[in-house]
Image (cartoon, rainbow, N blue to C red; front, side, top):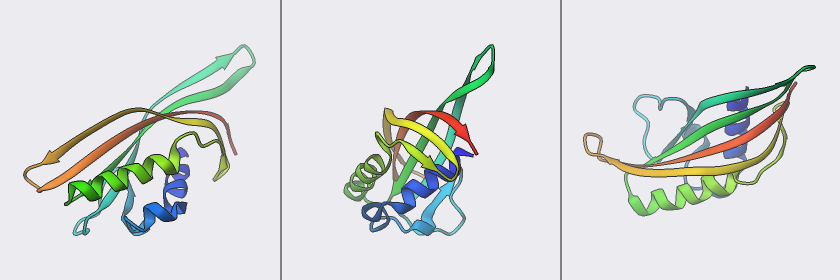
Length: 130
């Protein structure tokens, strides 16, 4: 459900797709034999909110992990990922969401793959799935 929103928002950001081809933005896992840079997004958790009348909203946590062979390029990509998502509200792919907020960041280097990575974690509130 919300994965389509993440994909749409990332791929709609021209500054980001100038750095990472939209065909290199994936849910959960990078396809084999992909050239870098690449991006993977995941849904990390969901906390539904209920009242006596039923469901009211979901608090959703998701991550976007960027991969690059070059650390400087990785920083540019992570900056554009943040710009594509942070503080965005709206209805996309039939899902209504409010204030995507950055909540955490971590970085690292995969020595076996010789690749840098940056993980940005976000939260949002979903109030409608159409």
